[in-house]
Length: 134
Image (cartoon, rainbow, N blue to C red):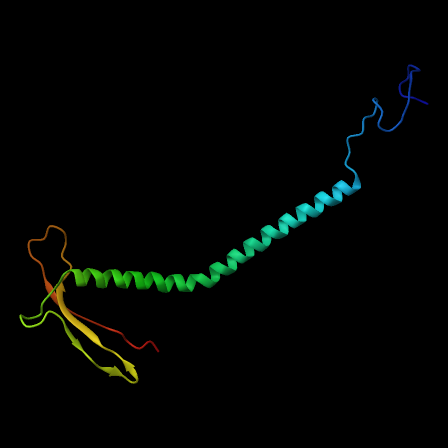
């Protein structure tokens, strides 16, 4: 028994008694919790790196898709406003080739862009065709 204060009182210095309660983790608990935390961090890192790699792969494709969407929107607006070039036919087309590629085209008249509230409108002849991308 050892004296804890200068008054001569004595207490038992045993581990885990009411005087000194034990509130610590055991070594196995610390090792298991550290392993679980490491597993969670590694899983989060792998998910994050997979998302970054997927984004790098998809960005060029998304740009092409966005450009195609804009072009299709412009073509759709032109086709909605299409009118006949002459009384005999509404659309004119031409069968042609560029090298070994078939490069047909489509010609028609459509309303040209006019500001909202304009008192007159313009017509223009449109021609759509595919060009070889080299």
